[in-house]
Image (cartoon, rainbow, N blue to C red; front, side):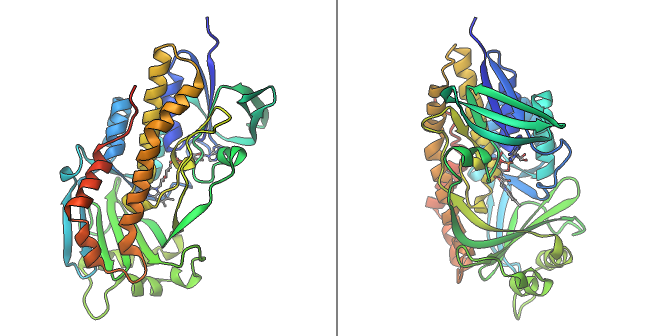
Length: 403
Ligand SMILES: Cc1cc2nc3c(=O)[nH]c(=O)nc-3n(C[C@H](O)[C@H](O)[C@H](O)COP(=O)(O)OP(=O)(O)OC[C@H]3O[C@@H](n4cnc5c(N)ncnc54)[C@H](O)[C@@H]3O)c2cc1C
């Protein structure tokens, strides 16, 4: 009988929880998944997410029951409307034109809850990792040490270490260093507010005031997610005086014209929560899926940072995890337990796809840059080349040949 392959998944966020559920059900693998936070700690997931149709398509191919559960707890994402802040409509794109299925709108904490619950006892919570490195006895394999409930534990001889530990991946830092951030030149603030809009806001919509963009959509239960953007010099710190209600009104309300009722409501709601807003600078980073010398795989944000303009961060993390699960399941089913070919297959399936999603996300950011004209920026997004690329993004999920 072959010894089971030891798999350690580090981080049970979007990608890690999907993988923990799938891989822990496979005979032939001995899976450990370590998560830093407690099961009900969602302090780092306080906003809403629009998750692209491609994520649901990929998840459904890999795990239909989990895809059903996620969809049941979400609202459908069916259209992308773009207007000026006075309400002038620039375009209204039904996603059915560019996708085979709906996307979803969901609270980030709710997505974590469903995915983590789906993995059940496969995830160990409250784990503080203290060391990640090569196994001294075997250069291909790795070793991880952690503390859980005050007890120090070590796993060595790990056949496959999967870093699904997000943007500041300790796994990636341990083996190849954290990738350098490429700043896109846009600062973004995000809040989740109670829905008291009286129906003014529902599906995914954007409103431009020159190069400032508000984006909002409703998420269950009873909340509205709002994001606003400011152009910023690439890499510069976000000025503190942008974080005041006065600065937000200047940025998002039209000058000399009335704002649309939705924009008026959103700006009031944003200003009321100004102190709670999550601020970040849009950035991307060089993708890397596998270490060349060791059996280490990266998926989701640890493999690639991407500009959030098309809502592809969690979306591609779901595609990555679905692809990896399907390819590993197929290999194990066929008795192919050598790990290096798994890594090669996942990298081959995902690399170009991720480069494409990253590139399209940056190009779609044009309307958020300093001095941008939202009308011209909206126009090219209604033309055949962009519609074709969006359709490729939402339809052509890359799950690998054996999947
Ligand atoms: C405010 C905000 C809004 C966003 N909106 C969208 C959106 O609308 N649509 C979209 O698709 N994407 C969105 N994103 C991006 C999306 O959230 C991420 O791309 C996605 O969560 C990445 O998934 P992941 O599985 O790679 O990592 P994560 O979901 O970040 O999960 C990483 C996990 O690893 C754990 N972890 C980290 N370090 C360790 C460690 N040392 N030991 C143990 N565990 C560890 C973390 O606790 C976490 O559970 C948004 C991001 C932000 C910040």
